[in-house]
Length: 498
Ligand code: ADP
Image 1 (cartoon, protein in one colour):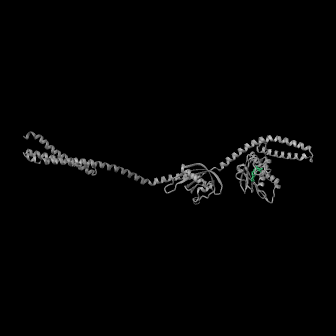
Image 2 (cartoon, helix red, strand yellow):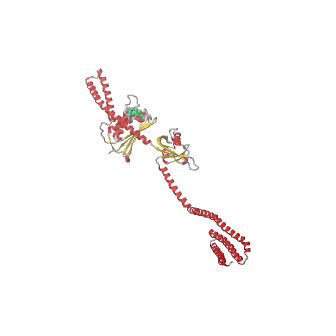
Image 3 (tube, helix red, strand yellow):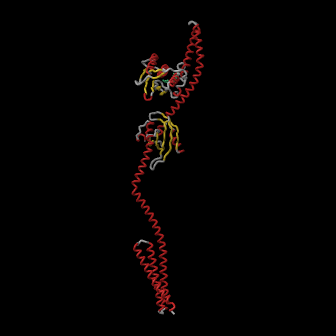
């Protein structure tokens, strides 16, 4: 009965023995691998799997061998009894193998996550290590870059020709550049400026609120004109540009203000406008003067002709004399007008300006009381002879000195100074008096023809305009500075043309 199954039983027997041997060989091999790398998770997993499979192989092979022995020896009934135990052990070992695999799958995922974290940790660690090693160098580099940038902006602040103010919102000056100190006439120690407010230096007291409200509404102001009042009380027209800046941590917000002094530019514009105005008046008046000059000549000629035929006792004689005098006055005015308009040719010769002043003063000495009116002279010894129209320059000096005498009245001082500027190739003549001065509103008009503040009959208003024309004709300039109640200073600059 059993005989036909013998080969297959043998195969089963040998197969079972081989199964056990192979599983134990695998186990041994994995033990070896595990020993070489105890932390290797795969080797651990395979070791456990092999252990489960070895158990399974032993249980299964032992079961089959036992079964074959019992069946061959005719004890099939005993095998039937223990068969469920063998099957149970097989099932358990398989469950163990399956569980180990599933468990490993979980472990493997966790392991991968740990590996990822470990990698990131290592990168961070490397970065930290790099930072640690290079931190000092990096701080050094940043500090140097910051210092360079700070130096650049400091330079901008220091060398700017315009005033730069950093102020708090209440107007308190936090920082002021050297140009600002110069413009405001301040001695710029930090202690000095930190007690000052921008509004102190604004002529218009509503200026600061206006600036602040514009900055708060629009964020900035650009080139708004305000008058700056320096600490010496001088007023300067200036353009204000400002914007607000957020303060750094722990610092208040501030306003950055750039102030451009345009006083010189405005004065220049006024001078150009004045020159234009005088040029057009000159053109007009010279036309009129030419037209009037001829009839005046004829009237003068006829009145002199009639005078010749009248005896001094004649009733007409005095009338004709009056006509002659008035016509001569008119002719003088007309000639002045023509001179102002520069129509008559000038004759320039080499002369010493000091001599011209002396001649005029000599001529005028009977017009004032030397006990009450002091004439101070201050001539520069470096003066050189100049090419001048002697008669006309004398007329200018005469006009200016006569005006000064009129302004000081009974007593005072007139100072006449000359100054050589060899490097600039020019000579200045300054005539200063301690008279009543000129009101600010009249200053722009005093060179206009016919402008006079003197009573009718005392002034024609042509003296300064004629002087202006003569000086222009010489390529020079004439300027005035005056403080009402204290006096006036006329400065004439003439080029040295030798
Ligand atoms: P006039 O002397 O005939 O008035 P000017 O052209 O010489 O004409 O002067 C014009 C005006 O300028 C004067 O009327 C006077 O108001 C003013 N002025 C000129 N020189 C002086 C001075 N030295 N001090 C004060 N005012 C002056």
